[in-house]
Length: 204
Image 1 (tube, rainbow, N blue to C red):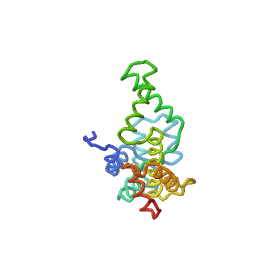
Image 2: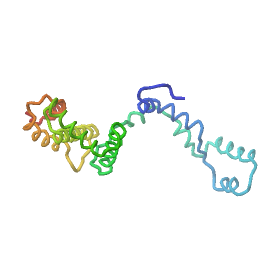
Image 3: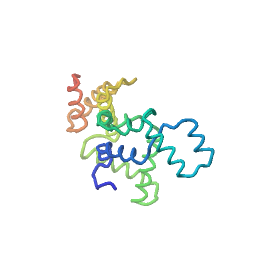
């Protein structure tokens, strides 16, 4: 039974010691000899005889008490386990999925006239121009910039050494967009500037 929680993944990570104990209580490893394994597997022993073999093996202190080792939990492992967002990679399959999602959502809302697809794109372009004073292409570039920054934060947090340095990719994209949109009160530009300044990079 899992209590109601807003973040089930975090809940389960916080309960790892209890889940481990539950698992080791239900499953057990016993140090059997080769002869005992053969007797159990090939001789068709009755369940009582098999239980006796396991019981004697568990009581034999000269055997490896492996299960007593793995059953022990002192939360040292918990400090080494963490959940993190994977670095987001550019994937054509992901783009295909979003295109299909867009088509499906548009048809579901407006019907199956193919002109609806273009109408939605034009409406979004007008909305971006009227309210944010940016083009649809610039909106896409801002999302790309946001992606670079998030990847850079993940890499910094995990102390990775990636082939591509997303921090400098973010910096280059930021400078290019700032020249176009510097006067725009955009949250992505603001957060990127703050991040780059924190890294000691010139974001002005």
